[in-house]
Length: 310
Image (spheres, rainbow, N blue to C red):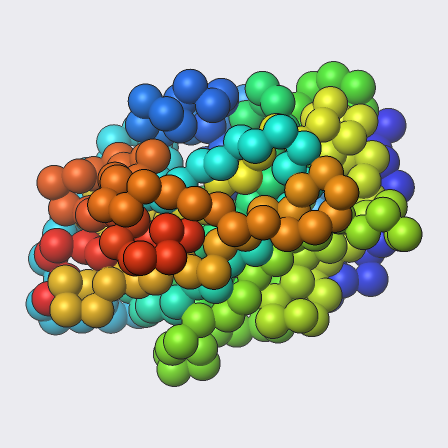
């Protein structure tokens, strides 16, 4: 059975293709710690989305003239740069994420949809790769008939959320796919100093609430994390790309910041996450081009940049 949910905050149902990669977490904490971030997603899902009547097949938007990284088409492997935290009793997470317009890899031999650039927070389950509830912003540059996992949205960045669970207590595996949040589009300049993204457990309503700058975007019934996942294990705070040629957010002269990072503890209070100053991020799928490290005296801030972007 599918757990009961509040669907009031699903104004735009975006299509999803079960044979394409979806945004979801790695298979285990060990994957995060060893930076083995291959999240293959060939397993069919029981998709519960309403499909749009027509998919607009537009030509891909132009990338910056200086961006020359080609798409590598390396087998649908999602790429990551970011952090994971697994304190006992974690219920929620919040972070201020600086928004960036990024570049997708350059298609070789025609239009390609093997490209995206995402920034998000999440809570994750115990073992299954589908056990995730996440929200942030997405840029999905290319359009083709297959481009359903990360909908193009006419080439404009947008705020999104997604949740899912694997086969188990709640029946066949399910993924909501990308759902455009109530906040809508994130055009260039909309939040150059960052938005505060939060996933919080509300014990009064028995829901996990995803909000942006204090405005609720999605209410998820607690039965999904508690029953379908078997409980919340931790949080992952990530940039995600689909190709090594995709630009990680942040530039050499202006790195992207993930700041004011806190987690909600078992009593409902909020605690600062503290990392060792100067440490590298837990995950970096392309260290030759992307950097991600803690470089703030507050110890709950990390920065990301792409060395190919001046």
